[in-house]
Structures are given as C-alpha cells and as structure tokens.
Length: 235
Image 1 (cartoon, rainbow, N blue to C red):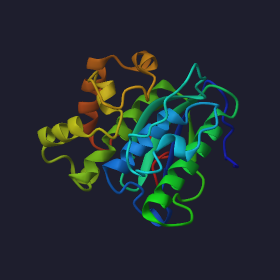
Image 2 (cartoon, one colour; image 1 turned 90 degrees about the vertical axis):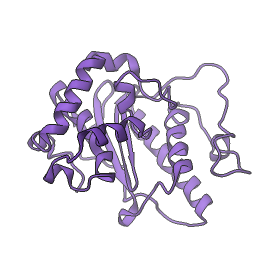
Image 3 (cartoon, helix red, strand yellow; image 1 turned 30 degrees about the vertical axis):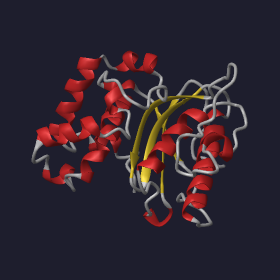
C-alpha cells in the first residue's frame, strides 16, 4: 500500500478513512462496538480470523469476542479514536516496522468482512487506502486531539464551526454520553471501551484538568486553529 509519507516506528500519525461514495460505515451501535473491539483485537502480530472476533452465529453480537491466551505484542499505540457515521479518525504510534500498515490492513479487511457478511453486500467499504499524516510537533498533536474529539458535535449542531455553538451545555452533555470516541478517557472518566488507548502516554501531553479546560476553550474558539490543521482535514 503506497504512501506519500514514510511511516517509521515511535512516531505519531493521524490515520483516517471514510466510506466509499461517503456512505455510512456504522449503521448502528453493534457496528460501532464491533469496530472498537477490532481496535483491541487486531493490535497484535498474531493472525486473527473474522470468526475469532465475532461469533458466526450472531454477526452483530459481542458475545463471541476472542479470548486471548498468553502474552502478545502490540504493533501500535492507539492514542485517540473517534467514530462518525461515515468515517473514523485514529492517532497511532508505530511500535514495530510496518506496524501501522499491518494493523490497518487487518482492521480494514476485518471490518469490511464483518459489514459485508452482516448486510449481505460485496465489494469495497472504504474509499480507497487509509490516509496517514505525520504528527511532527506536540502543538500539532494537541490541536489534533481537540479537533478529532469535537467531530461528533456536528451530529447535533450542524455547521457549528461556521456558526458557533448555540448551546454549550447541551454539547458538553452530548459529548459526555458519546462513547464512540476517546474523549472521556482524556477527561479521566470510567469508560466501557477500556483498554483501547495507551493511557500512560496521555498524561505526557495532557493532565485531566488541563485537557478539559483546553477542550472547552477550543469549542468556544470554533475554527480558530483551522490554519494549523488544514493539511489533515477531510476533503
């Protein structure tokens, strides 16, 4: 899979992709749960089959999640994630040479296989190869985290970046219950999708209270940081 950038171990990358023809790739909570399960299950050098992750008798159920036996080596650190109806965002750090490519191949093929089986369809689900952008500075990393975690706001306040947030309390309450991103982990809350991101690395960039203050301030500033992020925004 060709890239415009060279991905190397111990560097951070913004990884994102969306559905072919901008179609929805998460139809319901089962699909989003399946994707989050995959973020954990495919983060290994071990070969994992679709049937090992999801019980073949219950395509959308999490009851058949594979039980790990023994030790395994992670191939990436997951620092951030956010699922939207037709796309997803990840921030990954490669731990072994080729780790991100291996992880994204297993994640993309595994989720596409699950989705096509469940919805009785064939063909590609994602719009080509995943996109990868190198995160070169701490400042960029911090702004990117805030940008990714603010994505779900458009589900309740369309074009909020252009028009501003009309009801901040409503938005914060919505994000508090939005379990399809790592925002609550950064806020120090107990979450059901524990074990996906590397919590030890979070505190190198944000203390809990500092993150909450920075995030709330970024919501009020709207698109003030778009110049910093313009190269990684989805087309």
